[in-house]
Image (cartoon, rainbow, N blue to C red; front, side, top):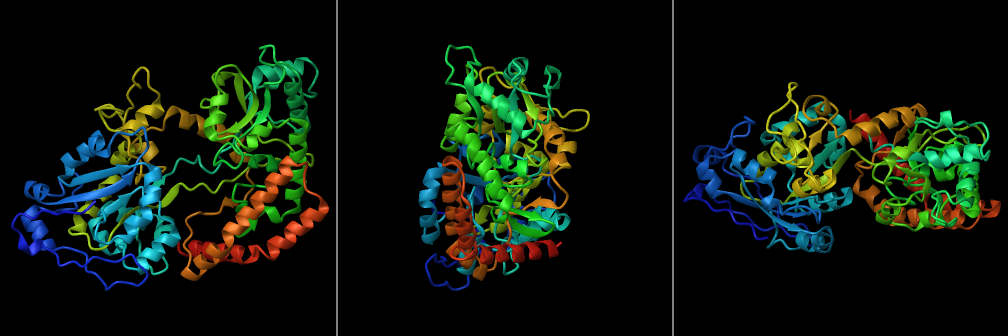
Amino acid sequence: MKKFVSLLAAAALMLSLTACGGGGSAPAKQQTGSDIDTLVSEYGFQWTDPDAPILNEAGRDAISFNIYSSKNASALDYNDMKIMQDLYESTNVAVNWENVSESVYGQQKNLIFGNADDRPDAIYHAGMSAGEIIKYAQRNVLLPISDYLEYMPNLSKILEERPDIKAQLTSEDGKIYSLPRVEEMGLLQHPNLLFLNKSWAQAAIDAGAVSGLTADDLKDGLSLTCDQMADMLAYFRDNDMNGNGKADDERPLSFVYNNWQGNQCDLYGMFGLNDNTDHRVIVDGKVTYTVQDDRFKEATNYIADWVDQGLIDKVSFEISQDNFLANGKGSETYGAFYWWESETVVSDPENYICCSPLIGPNGDQTLCVSNNPEVSTGEVIFFNGVPNVEVLLAYFDRYYDPLVSAQINYGPIGIVYEEELDADGMLVQKEVPEGMTSDELRLQNAPLGIIYLSEDAWNTVVHMEPRAQLRLERLDLCAKPYVPNGVEPCPTNLQFTLEELNTLSSYESNLNDYIRTNLIKWLMGGGVSDADWTTFQNDLNGRVNLSAIQKIYQDAYDRYVASF
């Protein structure tokens, strides 16, 4: 990973750099930067014309960078990806990629930051938390990208037009130390949709097991009361619905407990709660924890009763996402399930309809509002002391051109997209090669990572995949109408002070563990008693210090809102 920069007899470009330390004491302040006049005159460095190379041929041969990145196991080595080769041809910036698996990166991350003598120039897919960024910024390990924005016209424009994104990137000291990923499709806030087996439901109706429904009602957008759903699930449980001679392999209602999508949270909507896996949401500008609401107790006991009756498959609480998806293939076993699309889960998605949220015993009908972010921070970081870092920043700035972003995210022109744009100037997706899925094609050829695909890009640059368009149609019909005004996700990229981060580090994992441990015990064990609920609330307000955590999130959220 040692960084080498070959300079063609240009002594003026040689930088006097001292390695920055990753240890406990802050090293002396380093100078990062270059002789821009020499870069421009000798190596043709330019950053304003997006259609022209960043360097001339001499610069291409003289300057190179080493980037460390994890990658998906299915992906090609980034050095062999066509999109990376195309970027080299269009920019003349030589980037040598060192790819490792995500698990290897997790093991090596601290070692990389701790070894000042042998670091790459940057880390792609860095996955840096706000706390890590503050820690290494204070030690002068990370490059303050905001000091070099003049070389990044695309990012500068984004930050100017989107103060909300700027607020999520800006650390306590007022500087930006990482590059963001922005993919705004309007999908992530609602990762759970309820799908119902249409033929099984019709059989239950025909048998008289469910009142108030006819076969004509079985279409997308169906609203079921909790009693109707319970009757239907009981029928699925007690009959050989898939006709394989077994009455015990049907899974009435399934999900993947606490998964980022397809989880249990929408069930709490039957009691008017907009829950999510963090149990934290913004209601009328206030950071609200659903576990403090007595309706959470009522909902937990109701759901626990469904588990106890076998209406909810107990495997849902221990199954992995991969196993959940595998169980849906072949012979039908799912009567109903939560996911954000049926096509991924079951072999015959046409046999499943998308339902609106279940109507609870008190008439409540709402759903989960997830905190899954469409803006991700900490995606790429640069180490202080990188020679000619302005060139590298200008190179990565090209990733934020929407036409390039689409190829970084899905794959390159010539493999994933047609060479010619359509009449509207938009990318046209090629047919997926026989024997491959669109996911396989994408993962092989797209590095993912930093992009800027805003709502405007989907109307002017690249069409959404058909399955994404279908999800949006379903969300418009079955999800978005059921979110009350004033309910919003709690941003996950809030910026905290060092003192706040220290408090969160001391208490938040204990809080999350405490909630998780009790909730799974209640859901699997028949519910929560009044006495246990009282103890739980006392502990939230006492030993696990929820009030301090809530105040930190509220203060950070108030600062975030006030910044734009």
